[in-house]
Amino acid sequence: MSETYYAGCYWLARSEPVEACAQRLASFIQQLGPLEPTWNRWHQAAANFEKARKRQIQPDEATLAKLMKSKAHRFMDRSSFWLWAGENEEETSGTHGFCGSASPHSPSVCVVTTGSRGSVGERLVTAPVLTEVMRAMALAWEPEVGIATSHAHLEQIKVDQFSSPGTFVGWVMYFADFRGPVPPLPAPVQVEHIPDRGTLITLTPEKFTVSNPAHVALAADVQARLQEAGLLKPLRPWGTGAPQSG
Image (cartoon, rainbow, N blue to C red; front, top):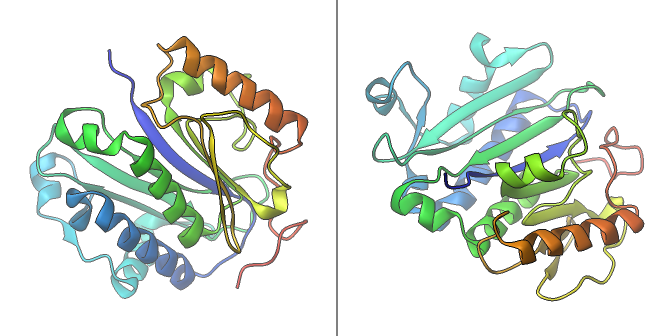
């Protein structure tokens, strides 16, 4: 069975109005467009593929704000979203998440699911594309951490069932500046600083897979180095050592 991949970014206890969340989502989707042709047409979820195909949505700030204000997408002080893209049922991808909550117990999140089948999966599951997805997440959402990796790798390395975001490594990673400096990392790891945001780390330009012992060993090495540097730790409430957004 082929590995499936995802990208996600996370932050904690940053209260934001729905309009601000919609603005972030619109910016994120706009940045995704040049990365993949199917990411220029987005749909709301529905009971089946044919019904969902008829629910195309224009991802501008006003439309997304209206969607995220609806009863189905509000829970306490957070707004949710769930959008998908794809020309056929076998090759879909999507983005979903939560934004706006001040709760210190439930993180805000934006996740991109890449799918693994066909030409779409082949185009998306590459180091350059996932690195650019993580860059878009950093710029649009201003998260504390981000990770893109395979679900198989996640299951292999996480300490327990409830491992927290920010405590383990992946194929592509992001750490906000306030997490601390990134230490020197071995080749072929690529490190890039994004001004006023944080640092992108890409383990290997090859397709990362748990079936490759060299990839697994490299991930373990980087995990140990980042752990020693103090970068791998649970999320902190926004503003406790982090600059306030705005």
